[in-house]
Length: 634
Image 1 (cartoon, helix red, strand yellow):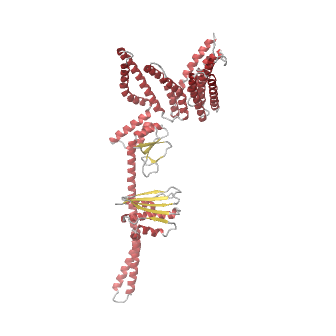
Image 2 (cartoon, helix red, strand yellow):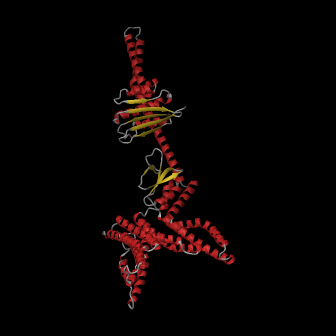
Image 3 (tube, one colour):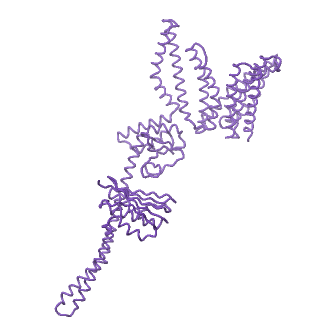
């Protein structure tokens, strides 16, 4: 069903034709500045309303709400065009036709604006009636509107009167479906109906604004006029926002503030009126003291009333925000009494906001993105930042809770999020220290077993054989039965082999090439690689960190040569007053990950053992950077 879209488009074109025709009349007959001002204001409002209706039908082509908005805009433009035509006829009688029967009919056309509002209440926001029993209402509205719009006389006048009162009754009854729909709705539909309720509040507040201006200035003037225009625009504007962007603002917050300010204004007007009348009886009505005293009384009452009233209205009309703030206060109290932990913030907010999918994400150094207190990633489509001191420390993530509520909760929960973040960071660091310690112990055990095996299978066997040969030579030194010189030569050879094997074992603990400096040690490794390696290493490096720097650079260079398909490698070592930085960069394929038991994982433990930190950046297709920061004394 696409007819609402075509109706809205036709209505918009009709509005443009009415505006063009009325503009021609204004120019041709010069009807006066007052008529011109009224036409410009109402034509602009009506055209904007019709355009909003067209925008709604473009978003929801099968929903008649957009066409009804266009109807409202067209009626507003038609009414101002009617007044322009009347003024043109009055300015130059006889040139334009105007039959009395047509005038009588035109005078009743304003009631169709009320009919359009009734249709809007019947179909908003889903585009369907609330139930089948309401199906007779729309055609009855049209029939009764047409009957009361036709001027009848005599006995038929009774029919017109009955149609008029029936028409008004049906228009007022159209509020009932909106109430029924609101009570049975949730989520988006309820939020859209709240926007409609906001427009109704504007209509209720309008008489109060007029009364306020009359009490203060003695007459209704520019303030009432401006607010009247706002009230006229509020209905189509609220409907358009509800249909196009119902989550643009927090409608609960807007409703709560509107009700609060309306009540404050009523109390303020009542107080001012009572004080002015009471003091006027004593000091005289025209006394300046009366106005000043009445204003002072209002100020004294308004100061404590505003905050208390806001809290009371929030409890009734804005429960999510208040419930969340109370939950945060309760959690803070229980934390102080050691009955809860800061990590309970997420569950407390879920219960208060009735949003089981709400997530509290923490920005922890070293983590890729936001994670919760358990370390699981938080990557919802709607994220509201949590700021502390102007810096982001986390996020609140939810699709069900309005963003405005999340922003208010984020501001109130910032300190708890920071404590949770620091505790999670500390817990992660402790877990990493424990895991690193376990890996170091395991690596030490494996290294000790390797040394035992190498010593047992190599140098130890040779030294045992050497001892046995020397003992044999000692026993047969005088009898000449054994070739002592041969045994001694064999022993010397075995001793040389054992020394060489011991040196090889010791080389795995600390390379002997480091005796000539880190640059020389790394040059010995890189000379045999098929990839050019550029070394930028200063000479004055601390001896106690040279071994760690050597193994970091050697492991990174070797991995780049074997697995990264790199064409160039750069090794940079720089020392400042407190730290030494070892940075290895290649232009390979990237994607390196420190898996358990790998060389990179071992480097993490080796660097952590000397109090340093190792960072690996290896985006896919953009090379790999390994940087170790090693603390050193100045």
